Image (cartoon, rainbow, N blue to C red; front, side):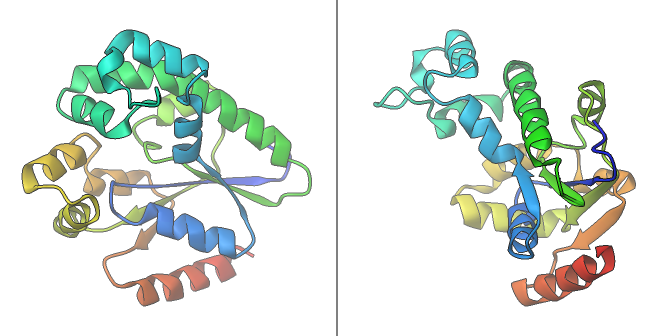
Length: 205
């Protein structure tokens, strides 16, 4: 889906590489960012079609007391078994990409650059194309795996084994580099990231 002269830039990374931080910097610069994580949560809200499909497959044990899907319970299942993770993706991805296309249409008027923040962009790159979403660039938020592991353990207050399982559920960050139009190096602190992003945003104007 090409929006006339609108450039569509996909933002991705690995878990705990700082993708959300980069997206927030871009939003503060005044650009529209369509957030795949937010959409994924929305399509699995109680009463939505994806909610019913997920609960029908995974069962009532993944539900919190209020009937909503407990993301931690569901996560413990999908990160420990690839076949369950693939099943969840097959259920929710059609709903996510349908909503992304709707939001693209909503923002098409008067937007020169539109950002799509998609955590599993590389993992789903073929599916994205098949669903008619055309990316002009891919920006990868990068950090080395050891830093990624350390940040994930600290962020989620989890042990090394669980953190490794989460990281290994995605394509290795080093392999993702070959897909990237631009690599955003986030191995430093927030000040270094902000300076880097300021230069990048100046470049695309």
